[in-house]
Image (cartoon, rainbow over all chains, first blue to last red; front, top):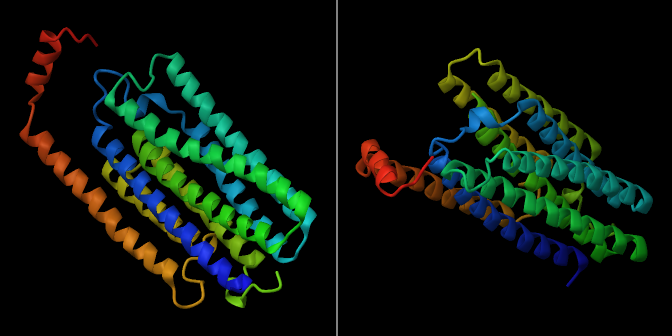
Length: 189
Length: 120
């Protein structure tokens, strides 16, 4: 099998995995849609979230997704140092996003609004937490990949992994757009 | 990349366009919701519309959907996923709305909380 055929095949397989992840997130979104009014006397979405905070989170992740695209462009030029630099920036922005999310979770729990408070908060923590878990996995992936590219250079294998990672990272940004819009923006409105 | 086919080659313009469009759509959605000038229902429609627009932007400019070489299996899998998605989302909301409507009136809820000693 040629490298190109292998790349096409691997990409399709990974894409199919991403599509099953879409279904996972869809069920969590629906759970949220069904439960978001069940606050059991506790605070609702309009009382809990800080909108400017979430906007910053969103822009961090979006920029991270864009920089990840720049890593792919650098990979096409075979510019190893540029790929590593772009991956480093992608990692830092992603980690900043995750840090903000964990800060928000921590604050909610501290104020007595954990996932045990109401059906709405259970659904909220499950949906946003699952996205956060994916981001965490992505950050680990960046670390492993940067080490591989650093040691072996941009071989067909490491390049293929980089392309798959970029799909994963862009996908997580798309999921976040819907969390941002449906959970936060519509929750506040 | 000695063997990447031409159709898979991306360029800077694609990513920059996608990024700028995404930022604009994000800010538009944000200010529509936070400003609160529109009625809640219209805000809902605008915000969901902008989210779908951004989904399309990112699918085309970041995920390069439809840019693969033929046969376009990725696009096919994507379309199938959309069908499953529609069934799962619409079907669940439909069923749960009916359940909410047909079961457990609010007073019953209150009574259960009282009787079972569940305190708010």
